[in-house]
Length: 141
Image 1 (cartoon, rainbow, N blue to C red):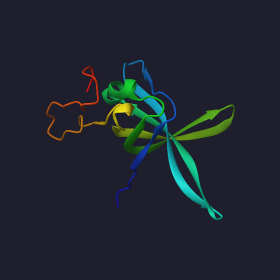
Image 2: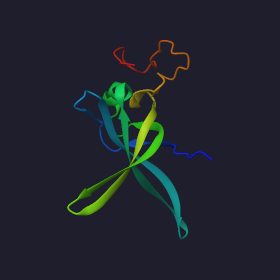
Image 3: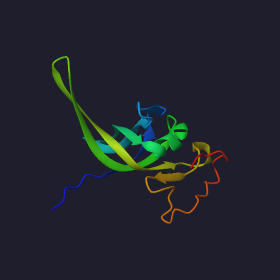
Image 4: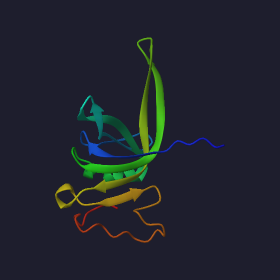
């Protein structure tokens, strides 16, 4: 049996996305999302949040970085990756979501809805994408 590592999340950005570049020029877009869930505590329901760090590499991350603002709702699909390092003699690790597909969610006040993935902008046949009507004409994807 083949191993499986896949994750799908819908949440809101906890901060604006950060776009940086490696020495070789590879774009890296990083952001964090909060994903709320309800939990029963005694007789009452409480709402709690999980926080996930997301990294999107390449052209995809570069294309959407300017639209990933704090509070925006997004859907992310990808895989989990664990980074390990040593700091001050202590072993550390961090699990991140490596995004392969990203969808901007929300209505007009939240910037519309658009999808971008490694395979293109929500298009299977690589046809030229048509931007969502809520976006400005200068959308790079």
